[in-house]
Length: 228
Image (cartoon, rainbow, N blue to C red; front, top):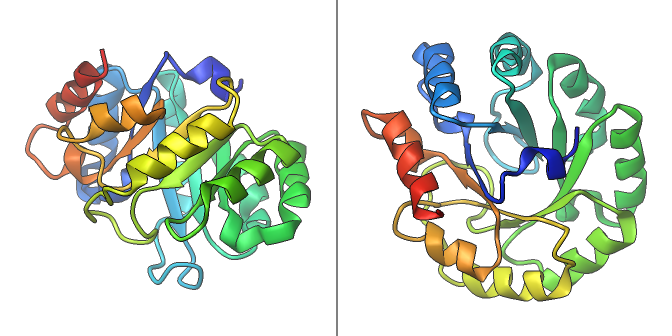
């Protein structure tokens, strides 16, 4: 399956990095029953970003539950040399990998090739300091499946949305064909998700705004409802 098969016009993706790991399975099952199709799975290596986050072992433990309910995993690799992790991610149940332009540079085409060899969809992320035009040019030249515009500096959950991201999303949308979806990650909440959608995004990664309250399913449904 491909991103075009997963997206129901728009998708709110709960970010597992922000979940309560003592109750992870129950939280995921709740969200699947509430309608979640795509989960965002952050992997940080302690080099490209400071924190070392969750990895394929955690992915492997939860993928049977998510697959049973028809869900998929969108794995965001905040790592140097991300292609080294593709085999483990595919084996653990990942469906798509997103790599950073800042990490792979001119080697993006080979990274895309390796992802395809492992049966993975692939997205291209770029940080706030990188020009949208540079990301768009790289995305179009290599045939990635979606483009992730970071609205925070990657690494830590709970950061506030950078308002200037709206302009970068609009610029990116003008540069890409309508068939290539734009994802936004960082500080997405009920106050800004409609503006982000209006700017041109269709994939919305939400961590703290879903998991920080007592009712994560209600928080997820509220975000989805704001996009209706």
